[in-house]
Image (cartoon, rainbow, N blue to C red; front, side):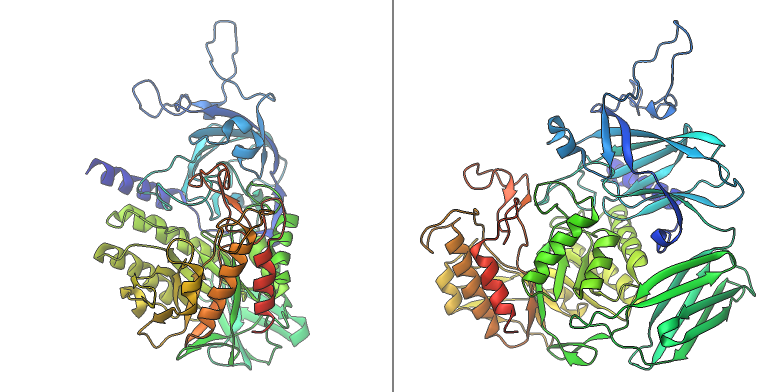
Length: 592
């Protein structure tokens, strides 16, 4: 009961302190706060609690400096212990490789702007729990390691230097999302950009520009201002389509319109994006937006009315040539180019929302995207605060990317157990998706219900919600032999397309041997060939995203001869070496 009350209190605190995530933040007036931050590693929370475990009013967030020889201060932020932002602390400081706990971050924020204008501190992601302080005063709290958040600091910035301090804690808890266990590294830190954002007093809070439902010759426009002001003029322009439409807001500060025009459609073969401007008063936001429809008819997925096969690959947000969190555009570019080299038209960005740049770059390259929240394995299904946390992460993910035409699938879970509490939890998330977005497909990575050498059966109560029946299956790796694939079939009693969200096998790059020897490149390549042929003969197969593009760090993988804390199922090693199975998948996709 105590844990439930604490979780509810945390959920209330989150809603009390969180501001709506700024849409298209990189198109706004921003100042980067990336770079070198001073830090204090605080494993026993000395800077947050007093010796009675009460939240102290004189914690490290006060950044106290001795004013005389009599003052007693037992901490300081100094240049001897620093971390780069964005980045994880695990790789930057080897002694923190396995560290889970609190690290305090500090940097100076110079300010000489107009204090009457709205200003926000924006964090693209902090893993996992963040308490943010400005000049010794708490701005608020955020929970969740992969979604953006911001705080309104209008009138709270003083002229000159301001002190920004963030308490970051990546300790795992059963009620968290994700929960205590996962199969990826728990990278701690401020892992994505930090920005100081300035907006006009009345700004564009949100906008949507997309094809009208079931139409190819109409575009729906909508806009919402930061204040509920009537009679405000907002101009939406798409020069290449000769659109220059002026909208006038209603009493809620919102406006909508539909324009008759037939754009060139976005597709993997022709990833057409249009330059768009949304202007209101002194503010002009620029974007690049594509237009497409995605739908399911029977057991077929259709993009722009034509059948499409999802030639996919799963990707973790881990850097291409080393085990660390992705922090640069170049690292994103490399991962997505490898996907293109595989002849992919689809990427599953697992198991959490990836950076905004990753999604936008996939869009430019013509890669459809499966976007996922980390409702992973054994979530605390009966905890209301856990559900509120998952709903918050889902909302923020969808809010950030709702104008991205590349995203064709929202995923709400991965490999979750069948039980009534789980069905209720996921049903609430499914309703949230369906209410907010009828223009994309809904799915989740299910598990096989039962299996013999001849047949696998898929039964899941969530079939009523999903548009695509997706499941993970590792026949030939975690059970059975590769040759079992030659006689194996799938029983899926739903009139919907099915998608294999994971399959694969581990292989050590450069380790060669017979195709019957696990961990060799030959074993992995042979299993890929047999698995692809197996699914290719199944009715309703709509695509796959094998596990996974590259080897990635995982604390669960402790065989030092083959794994050494890496999941070795990658088609590319953690050093960028392509394994033999890379060519098998590439060549198969060339035929689809």
